[in-house]
Length: 276
Image (cartoon, rainbow, N blue to C red):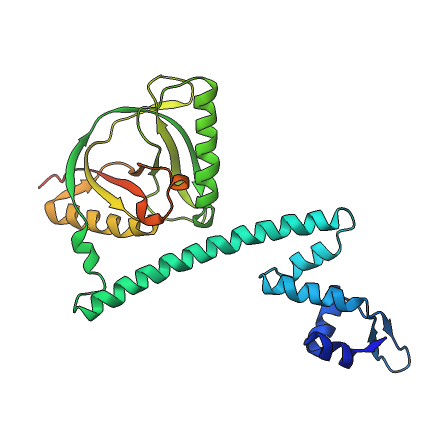
């Protein structure tokens, strides 16, 4: 048996941390002396403690680690699946950090050249276009900001499955319409849609008409800047928004190697303001 001090030194974990782990039921001492309260750990528990440290290094929460340790059936299989899921999560975070780093380097370069950090707004193109009427197969729902990546995947999968099941004809790329005038605690009123040829249950007419159009080459995180520029231009030129803003996803994000290859068309439906 090892005293808590010896166990702490071997595992490089403080005694305070070991007591906390025992308090939450993560790893309990093998024995506690009833007379003096001294805690003792077995040699076999060293492996458990090393596993806990390894999983913590992979950014597993203590609750996740506890669930893994308490799994009685298919322990290795559960651990394998947990590691695979954590790997995907970390890969996503790494990708996001790389994108942030690229943006940071661009901003630093602009500042070195004497440009404003917001100078990229000048490069956003504004075009006036007439967008023809289309028939949308759609799913409309309230979506929280954190749920968007999952909802994009789920809703478009459902729409594409229906299109395949009923042999419908896609005529334009997938799109998302934002009906909310402002953010609410219930999320954003969002419509996921695919334009199709056939009129079918679950479709509707959409006739946006005159729109400001901007084509964006790069990550979806850049789109908010486009909205700001479009709204600014519309206000300056005497236009007002008449219906939902919408984005058209020209290429599939799962088929590009880098976010810089993404192509998105951003539309802002407008009309001239009435002058009194």
